[in-house]
Length: 435
Image 1 (cartoon, rainbow, N blue to C red):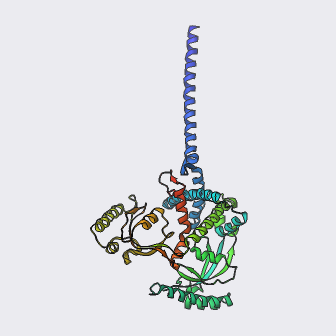
Image 2 (image 1 turned 90 degrees about the horizontal axis):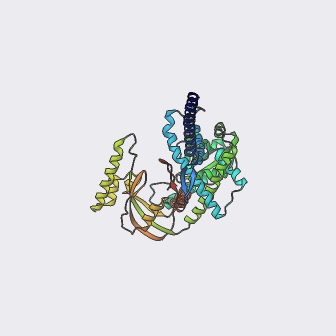
Image 3 (image 1 turned 90 degrees about the vertical axis):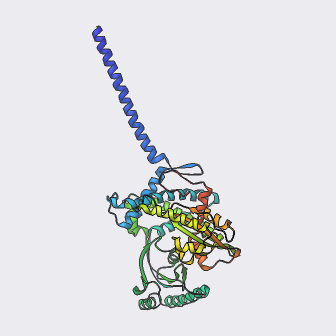
């Protein structure tokens, strides 16, 4: 009996130990699985007003955004993990975080402003976002070297108006399109093809051009439309519904349906609404303005293909600072060191009004500086910039180029200020949340 009892006790100990180990292993596996689920879905990707934006929202947005990449490069289904796509996909990771943050900002702002997006608005935007349109145009440029910019603008507009009248009288006269495009268009890519640009999807043209084209009926010819490139006379030739496009089919192949895409279109409606509201405020003329010059040094990542480029950029910053501190002429230093296109004019970027600098910090520094003063350097992840305020005016009329710049950047200007107001913070390492 004693031996039997000892064996039973030994068996009990073995079973107890085995059970404890098994429970521990199962618990460890469950903890690991729960931790993986938390890290992939529940952990914060960013914060807004101190509240977490869960990573699952970022992951879902990234999957949706990557469809654009696969469509653009013609990536076959199943080949998404090709190593050659790695660098391009990494850029979309940052974009997906920015998109999710932006969506939360739009929801908060819309709620505070009492804005409701109707199903009709969403449906219309859905067709714009995922449909396609075919256009042709004739471009009349404004002479960039004119000594009288206003007169040059008026002359270009008058020429475009004459072209528009001829085409509006005979919108489908192919011989007329061919002649006018060849003789009068300043677009080298389409002038020898009767102005044909082919089919395009949302975002391929500057907003002024796209908005004007989509406002037309099929076959209609527009009045002259001003963009940064000059005056366009546009004809809308055809439209494809969203369900007919290859882009829509690509989304479908990755499991995204009309509901997913309409949810994205809703945010485009809000973007357009807030952008128009901001533009209306910024375009009120006259406005406070500053005449500004700048020196910019581009900063490549230290992990880039050329590791010496980062060091070279740091040395150039030091060269600029020492030169300016020693009293060197700002324009001379800009011509010798700036990486911006304005270097040829000594860094002079002209008169700037609010809304033309979309970074709130930069705008605050520039508008807060006295005339003749050089600002402290302003650094971002990719550039280092010093400004000099050449002149200031408390009330100066906006010119056409300024209005175009304001229209292009009005929404971005609004969004950057909202993100600052809502205290957006990046949580996900290596990604951009727009703080």
